Length: 153
Image: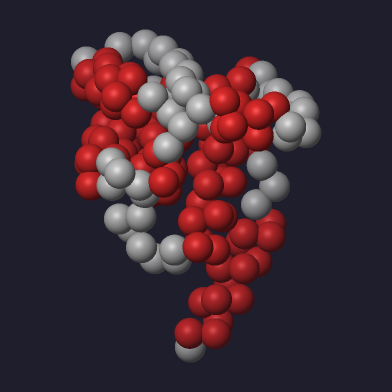
């Protein structure tokens, strides 16, 4: 929540959630966590002006939430408000309107307490936040891909 709500670091939010998803439900593309991953991805694309990527990701996020509405992964947040905000973002992306951030409203005091106990994060700004995927060191990722490719042959 800190990456999404406080820092609007949607790329990092996506990365953290994706790592967790890979641990608990690898390859299950209908898992509720994928809704949050797609939401973060959609917001990242929209802010960068990639409207087609934003529309695709935000729309899939809505579908995954609807598919899993009763999931524990949606407890503690105002899910109807989240859905309303995603739909608003999707409408704006469809109209190629400027990016507007929103926060995920936390309604559980227990969840708020857990978030408050997390270590402080250093927020990024400017291009380092908006174009994060292009500016990061990808050497480990590329090395892992090459290793995987070699192992297939």
